[in-house]
Image 1 (cartoon, rainbow, N blue to C red):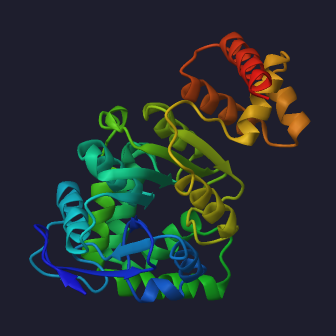
Image 2 (cartoon, rainbow, N blue to C red; image 1 turned 180 degrees about the horizontal axis):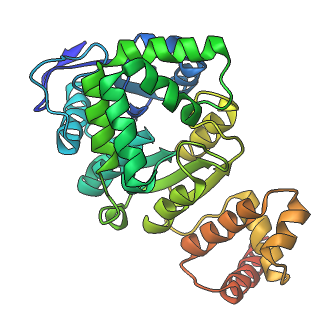
Length: 335
């Protein structure tokens, strides 16, 4: 299916029959070809068990128009909203990965009445933080001058230790998704986009998913995104592949579904693991001791404590301990 957008004619598809979920997998895409890449098709299929998944190719990519298009960040936002309008989705959930995460976050910030919930994966607030300026410039120039070599240079950042077969499949998909010129320009747009000023305006329930050893986008950049969005939950995930549908993709899917399917709550609602961590904080344990007690990485324990602070809107461990005491008293009284 196609719809007209301010940035050019866009190809889109829907699958599933639940609440609408606008889905942006990042950088370049191909509605058909991407379904055959790694576990992408399985990921979307599982999401479609619970949602109407709305996918689309950005202007210039995949099955969308390649000529007379607007590749600017604002043009991409306008195209995404036009797709939502074409399927009659006045309100929707958002899943955005990498560059698509910036897009999804901008939509949530600028159009708060349209977004129910927001899941961001492997993203950064400012593309300039991804690499030093000379590295970014050289990558863009390489992609523009020699698409094949550029893909090989980027493959290690997207996929951990790719096999020859995986590298060949990744390269075929990317070449089918966009021309060298479009891929380079969209990468350049990503590197020059900074949405830090927008993130505090987001009011939708938000989960920030990030693999702890992501080679394409450092974990600390995801932590910054979560810290800037009021009430956001940071969910650290194991692994190092930047693509959410490569490696342990079921863990990414479970985290996304667990959050999206969680009913909205009027007050702070901690997950079971967060309640457990809060209890250990109340016992006076440090993050490193908590990590050993729960057999998780120290940065995972730190992320849980940060989530608890944001959800409870407190600033100290003593305040968390006070909340735990009050919560236990309320729970006992209710029994």
